[in-house]
Image (tube, rainbow over all chains, first blue to last red; front, top):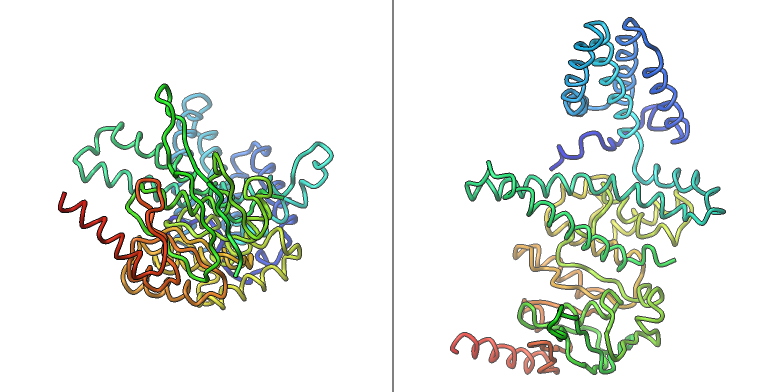
Length: 203
Length: 236
């Protein structure tokens, strides 16, 4: 199950771990904008080198780097093929490297920031929205729950797929998708009950 | 011990075009003992009874009062008094790491992040999970997950702990560990269980069958009644 947590927080004491969340998020925003806005194929490998350096500084395990890259790889390949078809090889290489850089940059943030830190920061940033009737804690909690639900949802997907396989129905999408959707909804209800029981959302 | 009062509390659900189905018949109980067991077959209504105690299920008639607080009108106050532990801890653990999940429980109570972290670490240590503080909740064993879920409940310092079949998914060793933790609590415990050995450790046992309380008393008598019900079914 631990592989499901790839891309999430890795405890450590590097400079990136110690930086305030706001600085890291701002840095990620600036870097991401630079990657997207600088339209030059020569800049793409530089950005990739910078994001790899960030991952190295954060001491993100190579396994996690590979998993994050692998997750983006499929999208990057498909997007690059379209770019190659429409605009040529140079644009395809740039798109491919830029998408990998964006994935790795995000990984450095999530690997060095606990969900709790992110929740606290989001709650602080959402405070001005109180005048509009928005509950900052609820906004932050929603984001935290979304992140927290990912590994559990992937686990449900794997269990459901294995159950379909065990019945010899691995090529039948209905045997997989219907129970998966039902289980995800049921789990959401159970989690809602559990949060309710812990008094979260009462105040 | 706190007083939990059920006054003709019942739960019915509408069935489209077919009237209503009674999940729990009007039930009147006063629960003051320290360890209370609730036993019964699957679908008998025992979980519904337990869930009413902290307002997860609202009585459709009658009322449930915990320490003077009505579970419907004063739900937030009741949930501060009554902690609830579910059968499957996977539904209850929502944060990535153990310490973060305990911190989630403490969010509304402790504003300062550093104090909250320390309190969460203390709660984990008190429940034998100190070395797993920064582990993923998904890397824990079933027993450890259930203990973590319980720790998340205890972090809020409830006066009553309701546990709905907390050992059903556990092996024997983990069942013993979780049960020993539950029975070692200072709080009043309401334990829904299929495990008659655990029920026998309670001060009072309530037997629920077909949406009704059919026996209520000392464990030996209540368990004997339940066993006769089960034997009757298996020989019928």
